[in-house]
Image (cartoon, rainbow, N blue to C red):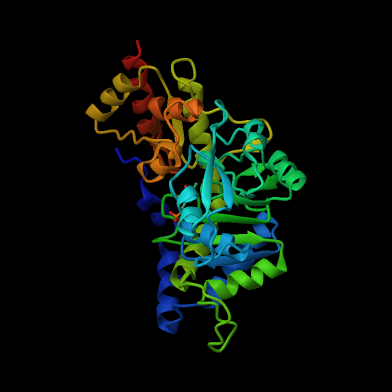
Length: 368
Ligand SMILES: Cc1ncc(COP(=O)(O)O)c(C=O)c1O
């Protein structure tokens, strides 16, 4: 069984995607172009942000956002702290560390797995510059509370929405919170392209103008380089593919939610299924569960060639690369414990019910 069958998402729109790709190739409009502009405008409208900028990946999006806020490479950012959850994909902490900033790791809420908003204030120091919550597995963190904390302490907020495009929090779309929000179009994401890609959203015109230049070598236009940037654009072929995948995106997310609910209804009495706050609509970028019988369950599933990847094997405060920061086991117990017990089940909009039933039966038999 496949963990995620991306090919089925393509099959549903094969004609439209193939036509779009052929049209872009016939125009040879590969870098910048009509598709990129249309995608930026469509997605900004969808999430209700003033501006959207297509970029090369989610990790680059975080970097470009931080540079736009003033933490550029080449500057001494070593006293600039950014509060991030410890339970997330590495890029959340990697991007600020790449710019020389200091990630400060916060523990998570044991039910939602998102940053614990009650622990953020104790981590704020005179050096704190940014809070960057992550909407883990497609469910928004308590973004309104985080915005309040940031306002009270005069800090920036970047919404790491790399897993949550299409999710909502109090009926507002993910990617519309914070000073700047970023998402990823990595193929396995809720809205995925056929390679790497990402997008940055903001209501701030100054950041918008700056990021547009930064993604294109700090070029103000006609090769007038006024800042140090990068090759950070979303290419036009990926933008064209995303435009076609965006048709029917809401249906795809509804299907994904239905599949997640099916697992939950059939498994919640035997394992810990995802907890979704009433304020949230999750897009279930992953369907992750916990069990004290993890080893037994995973062995039973793996024996039938059903993959059960672990997001995440290590909390980031214990990642080898951050050893010098002095964190030790026991510092962030909720994140540490979760990493020991969590594993993911196959989920995607087109997953056949027979596959889900097989997963459910094997789990129920394993814990009998
Ligand atoms: C929370 C989070 N942040 C950042 C990223 C980086 O995105 P990308 O893989 O597009 O660079 C990811 C991607 O997996 C992610 O899940």
